[in-house]
Length: 433
Image (cartoon, rainbow, N blue to C red; front, side):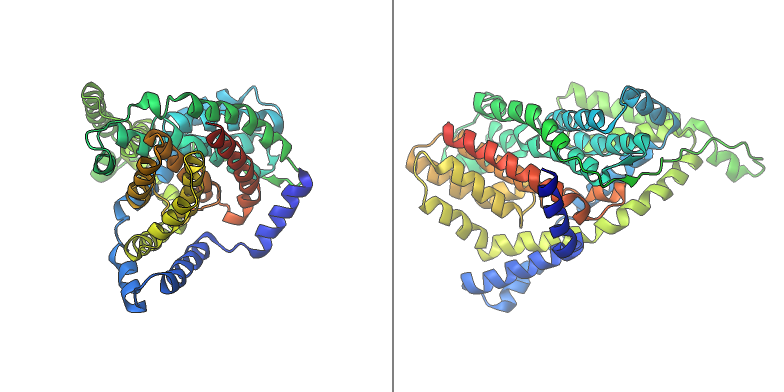
């Protein structure tokens, strides 16, 4: 395993560019492919690319808040103390990786946004405690739990089709697929169970002797300074933090009563207002915000380019062609497997579960109906394909990379190993069912 990891790591160090360059190369790859495989002119293809260029602005801001809210909360004295207590039993790298892998899988299954944030923070704390660790492996392991999100409680495709999704009813009128046939289906739980057992073991097997020094996150002590002006008195009043935290509690409780789901906006709100309360005063909160925002600078620019790729894939029909290719070679037995693989390929260019369902859902559901295959299995196969190649698609890893101060090549060697193993597991179960 060390030889394999060393090979993939050196391969990535030599040939894998920065995450932003990866995005630009993907854009050109899709453009050239569309030029040869679709009937559109270069001018029309550029127009498709620009049409949706700003469509991910709201999502980009969500990802910024994922990063800064998690970092701000982790930098509060109380949370810093709590995390130290949580990881206090951990004495070595083996124990840290076991805890981190299991923690990431469980919490990403419960909610992908929450799991992504807390796993990254936990990885940082564990690495900082042990001082010298395989830091790239720690961050890759924290990210690896994201693999199970689309088979979990916050998976967008199973939640959509459980509520009478328009794409589903277009092919299957009046059909709603309950969560008992998707998230809680026996075969889906088997995949989750296999990962809970094997992914932590795989993390242990990937340990190498190449370790780096991880500096501890310094939490500033509250300094007593002379407050002389009215403005300084206002900035250091705890009243504001308390009252606005109470506002947040009212919103949270009201949403809970009304059955509002725990989406990424609510996760961000929880972390943000906890940080606001625990920093004590508006002044200390703003100081923490200024430090945290630096981590977001390297990721913000990439989301418009990915939005352009998604628009190019959708409007040119290239995504449809990829899906149709896999449908054409499918049988009743193999359609779930080919749906999974096609979903994994399209996810490189449309790294959004909801967006991928819009692009591929109608084609795969029609194939399921024509071949007499359970639509729930096809929908979940597509969902697993979307989640699977996230392991080597940097789109979702950007917040963790920004938080850790690493580059894509620092974690990719480990992520490839996670990808290969998880692909074998998911493909085997899908073919078996």
